[in-house]
Length: 163
Image (cartoon, rainbow, N blue to C red):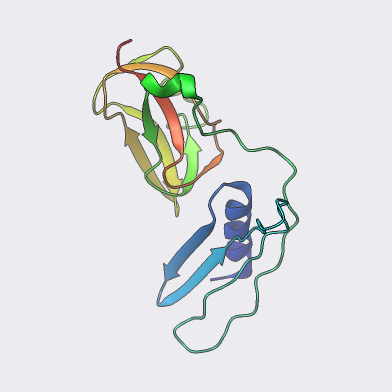
């Protein structure tokens, strides 16, 4: 894996809420882990570690990027949102609301969706994965902005099944 690819993976971890990312490619494996100090109540600079490759040579430590200053989109629904069904990301990747940059989004807030309807794309490792609704209802809230990184299990949409 080249240095630019590793840097982009580090940025992906840094910009998302995931704590760990592991990638295997042609018998080589890299793991990027973010660890935050929690014992004093203050978050510290995340630490990144690369897993050793099967060849036995220990990799050099991954560079320590600067912390991003932009706040992440809140993916946790409030207590008032308990009646909603969540559509979660099944993988780490990048969220896309439309099939192409110049195309309209698959769904908008207030749209009615049915089971099996495509609601977005999550790009992972240059593969476009269509995410389908598992329930029939109305899109009450879109929890993430277009072209933003997502983590496994992150809430993408809130669906009101009664709507």
